[in-house]
Image (tube, rainbow, N blue to C red; front, top):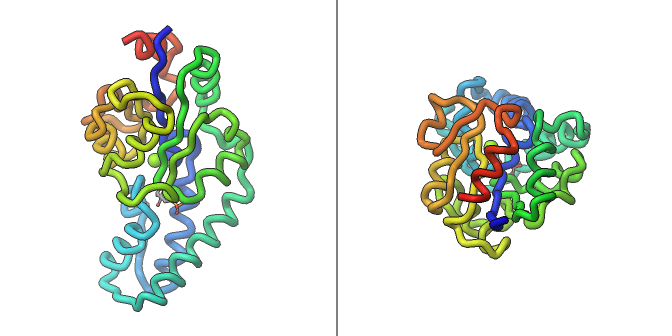
Length: 218
Ligand code: G6P
Ligand code: MG
């Protein structure tokens, strides 16, 4: 069988942490008198912590000093980590282990490509860390999605050419990044948002092992 590289985004693909990001960002935004809605939260998917706070401040027409900015970032992350602390394997999204196990059984490269700086701790909490050959996350990249850096680094870490890599992503910025990296982009979520992907599925229950086999043999 061929060896391909399969690169997974974390938030919204493996686990639904968007709800915890929402709660933590909402508390923070409200604490400085800024409104924060679920619709705005959607726009932060795949966006780094720094860029997310910049957007929230811009939406609220707020400017803060550099020191305050850092305090706000730290405070949001402390709240977020309190939610993460409670996570366990029950929060893995349906059929994600089925796909990961199939890839491992068939000796494929498996990497994480996430903007999160908390990726390792989340994977440990849900007991999936051992499934990944390589982890590339927010601690390893300078440019956020839609820049392809995170996925290119994932391919490099796996030792597999980008054109032989397949990305699973729930954010449109992530699909853009995967396409910019010349990879096959598989959208997980809403077709209207992820229309630029090569394939879109609502979740992993719609992805058969036959389909994965086709990708491997492409
Ligand atoms: C993912 C999420 C974003 C989050 C980013 C950074 O891309 O979709 O909503 O802002 O990671 O996460 P972090 O855990 O480093 O704050
Ligand atoms: Mg995501």
